[in-house]
Amino acid sequence: MKTRSLVSALTAAAIALTLAGCSSSSSAGSDDGTVRVVASTDVYGDIATTIGGDAVHVTSLMTDPAQDPHSFEASAQNQLAVSKADVVIENGGGYDDYMQNLVKGAKNSGVKVLNVVDLSGKKPVDGELNEHVWYDFPTVQKFADALTAALSAADPSQKAAFEKNASAFGEKLSALEATEAQLKSTYAGEGVAITEPVPLYLLDAIGLVNKTPEKFSEAIEEENDVSPIVLKDTLQLFSGHQVKLLAYNEQTTGAETEKVLAAAKAAGIPVVPVTETLPEGMHYIEWMSGNLDAVKGALAK
Image (tube, rainbow, N blue to C red; front, side, top):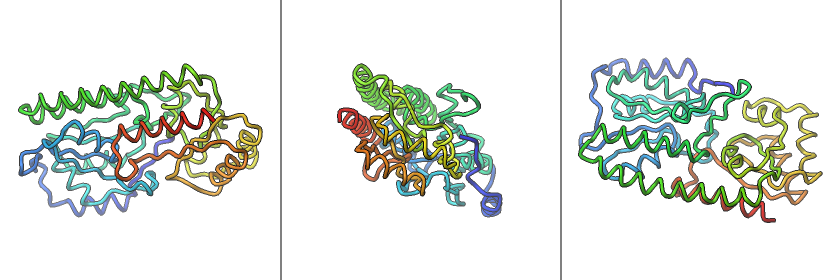
């Protein structure tokens, strides 16, 4: 996805004015001694809570599963949270550029910033980077390791607890990777379609082949119109039964994606809904386990 700023100049200016009185030496950390963590989305916030337990206070900025993440705008309250944080978690890769503005405006010299795309080591291919790295379990493990180190540095007295929690989390991640490997042994090479590249890392790990015209998913992600010929080619994936499933991003819908959804249903192609933030009441491992179950069920039909 091309990098897009999610905070308008006017919004950024308003935040700066609101926080102008904040001291650059404002101390991080909470009054109750817990480590303050601010995450751009509840995906990373949930993982931070899982590893940090009662020793951390986590604030997730983007939490609404019904919201288009690309339309999120940070607030002065968000800026204040970052100014008091010990650890800040951003996805990076152009996904949540508002975090960079918040960190810069906070003037919190003691904060540890974790950029998950940077931790992943992933690089753009043909100028494009799939920034949805929380669907890539090896990347999530790298993030968990870096987060554990950051929390331990912020509160050394809780290091053993952080490491214990992280180890348990890592075991569950390994189980998810084992499920991917099992599915790959059966379904590698099968064609699939997507509306956006949100779940592509997970689908790739199973060995599935994305048949969607690149110009279609790129236009949808960039909120641009899809040309009639590209839309026609995309719809023919379903009428021609060239794919086993459609992975459909529920959080960004429009006329073209609705046509694709209708075409899949008309052709009897299973639809697997995906989201960019946690479904209400779910934790990361449970969420991803459910995604894998849904993909497995769709492939088996």
